[in-house]
Picture 1 (cartoon, one colour):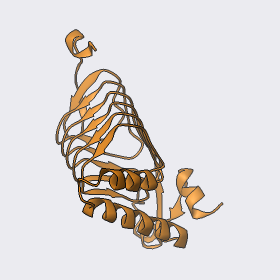
Picture 2: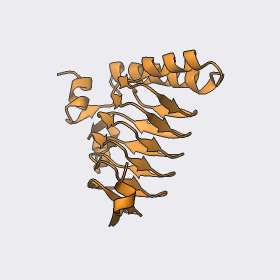
Picture 3: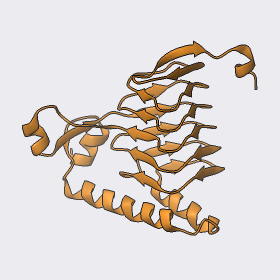
Picture 4: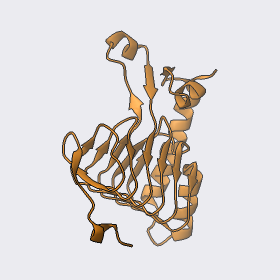
Length: 190
């Protein structure tokens, strides 16, 4: 099994692997082109995102600047809005559903580094996937950590650090993020 396969399998891998370094450079090249692209060049901007991302649905807006480690490990649904300064460290898969809104300065971290300094010094790391289900709203300055799933219709308040799963149909916020309350009937209506 090569280092990329180990990475995507959730196993320990060497982040300095030649193939992985090349793929990160390619993603940086694409995000840099996207981030400096004239906002009126919509066709070119969409083509750059489609080349960068593993899969992205129809009707999306991603405000620049954007950063992805790979981009290819991301799967995004339809009707997606992502505000500026988003960081997607997609060493594991990041799956985002339909009708998801993300505020500015949001961070999605799948990468895990060992506590042992000697393992870190050897380039060893691992990653766990992140899943954001349909109709989720993530406020500004939110950080989502490895292995987290956010349930359908849930709202994550600005400034939150999401360390564990959030169920469907709740408002959650804080550091660490915790459930504040369920959505009420009016908030659940379509």
